[in-house]
Length: 101
Image (tube, rainbow, N blue to C red):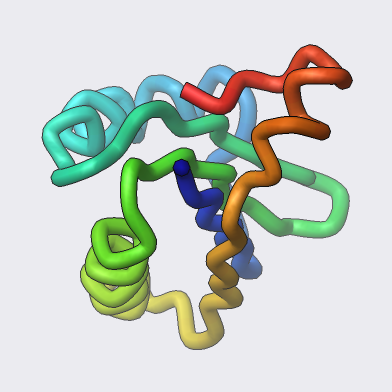
């Protein structure tokens, strides 16, 4: 069983290649988070929003990461962080070619 963490927030930038340059070290450090299987980075420069979709081994590891990441984002000046944790329905996900691990 695995769990999706969905996070989004308003952000002035950077986006695109500039985001890659600015956040490569952060992206590498996220790989060391307990229970993380993978992360997809999300962005919408027109709406000035960013975030990510994460897959974690346990609900507890997803929750722990959300708490830490929310505090980190607030330290970057981001006031409102939206975060939700969902259990992955692996049976249906596999039908639609989605990764569950």
